[in-house]
Length: 147
Image (cartoon, rainbow, N blue to C red; front, side, top):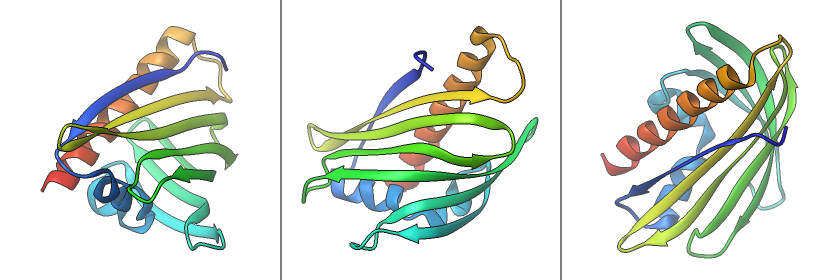
């Protein structure tokens, strides 16, 4: 899975505020349109989610999957949250990350995503789907944080 999709957006809020929204998985169904249900399956000693199950309904794509998370942030919320697929009905792999860096008075959020589906799909179509997922996630995150 060498191919991946990456996009960035600047959000008018401090990295710590953006991180708080990203880390609050249970509220994703309130602002992330395709996410219907979220369940924290396991937590790290510091209380952050270690494994999360999502139920997704993005029209043509419906799946319930779980992701394992790794957190690497400083006290100001600058750093990276990365994940790997644990279980899925539709995907063989899903590797991604949110990288938060200061940008003027706001935060640059860079989202990287690579998906491998169980069903055959041309690489060009897979990357197009990844780009739609990444762009939608960043747009919804920005709108939610800035509201």
